[in-house]
Image (cartoon, rainbow, N blue to C red; front, side):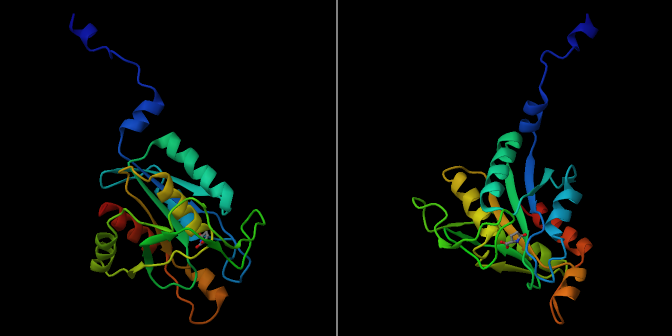
Length: 223
Ligand code: PCA
């Protein structure tokens, strides 16, 4: 009978259906540091949370926030990668003092920062992974991403350093874990929000959250 043929032949688990859709894992970072601009804010948190569950172009966005800790950030990222089996991974972070959305070109195998991470760890110069290469390039279409933003009048640039703190650490660990695989992945830094820049001093550049959201959406559409 017809109605019997329409019965679903298989039960698809939530995990399997998640894995079969085109998922872009988008991460932000929790607030960090105690400089005046920190203000217990991090725009990348707000972006990941605002875009979680939305669809951008062909991508279903899984947005999550990573702890700003050398070890913890990578542990959480790897758990998310196992959970979602994403087709693309884009990690975001805040770079106070930059005036444009910075699409990072390269992650380097080095931790060195003057400030402690949120677990109190200070790293003053050491390889991230002793046996790994010195650096990895982003595997995202960084020029297309930058051009998509510039064509809509949004400040954007390609950056050749993601620093040597937790953002670069996560970016490097991400690219190392994907070596030999075809999953496109990379990192984008966003400027301070206006309220952070105002606290950080005069002439510190800022970008509004709606502009950042527009920029990240445009960047994702061009992947
Ligand atoms: N920015 C820091 C770490 C977390 C974040 O959002 C960085 O650039 O390393």
